[in-house]
Every structure is written in C-alpha cells, then in structure tokens.
Length: 229
Image: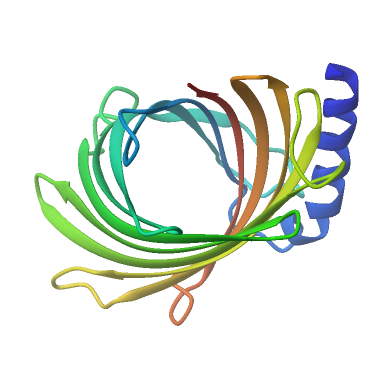
C-alpha cells in the first residue's frame, strides 16, 4: 500500500510540473499532524501542528531549502442545521526561531462551512476571516473556498482505500498602509484511509499571490497525517 501511495504521489507531482515551470519562486512544503474529535453531538475539536520549508530558487534551476517556521493551532466547530458548521480558532507561528529578522505571528480565525453529499461526491463551501497579528502590523484576510472530495472505490471511503480531492480558494488581504492583495489558490490531492482512525493525505497547491499587482507564483506541497476519533 505504501508503495502504491508513493506511486500516486509521483504522478501528482509530474502533473504539476508544467505549472511549476512558470513559478517565479520555487515554493513551499509543509508536514502537518492533525487530531480531530467530537466533544458532543454538535461540538468538534481540531488540534494541529506543522513544520514548513521554503525553497529559495526556481524549480527549473538549482535550488535549496531552508526552514521557515513551526506552527500549532486549535479550532472548535459547532454544527448548525444538517449541513453547516460555525467555527473559530487560534494558531501561533514561530518564525523567529529560524530567522531573527522575521516576526512571530498570532492568527485568529472565524468561519462558516456548508457540506453536501451528491452520490459519492462531497461538496464543501467555506467562508473564513483571519486576523494575522504581528508586533509591527495586523492583516485581515477574507477567504472563500469551494472544494470536493470523492473515494476512488465505491460510494463511501473504507479502510485501505484511496480518495482524491480538489479545491479553489480566493483570498483578499487588507492592511494599513499597504494596498489590498488578492490571491488565488488551486489545489489537487490524494489521500488514503490508512487505518480506521487515520488518513494520510498529500496536496499540491498552486498559488497566485498579489494577483492584481506584482504576481508571485508558488507551488506548495503539504503532507498531512490526520487522526479522527
């Protein structure tokens, strides 16, 4: 199974190489561990931690990677009706531990999500607001994401089976005195329900940053281990 997963990961990366060839900056990679649990019938809790690397040159040339930050966060959600959830949380990023010129960041978020199944497809819409707080500035980010996921075998996901996912997200960041920034993200990924309570998931995301001004393009790879109880 592990061999099959890495074969699919290689295929995913090959499909994204044409996008990467246009990147002005090489990109980012992140490893994340997340834990999800239900506190009762309506409340849920997510706790997560991650480590990010930054690639310092174009993927079409020689490149190197360096540590960028560590982060940890927690989110609480509340089920609303049959399909909706209201939630919020907090996350802290340690940037200074790897680069003294950077500032640590406290991030707060509030969101509403709506999920609906159509046959084996799950469609999810999410509206989210982030407050990114650093000693010298505070940024407000408004986000909308549309995503879907579907198992590759049958109508439901069983243990040892694979699934695919895709999403698109628009983001607007507002801060003073900078001009508003509009970003767009396109993500594809695959995962495996490795154990009854654990998923392994790989996502490849292409980012257009500051879309209306000096656009940067980044390829972002995320490997996640997700526990749910």
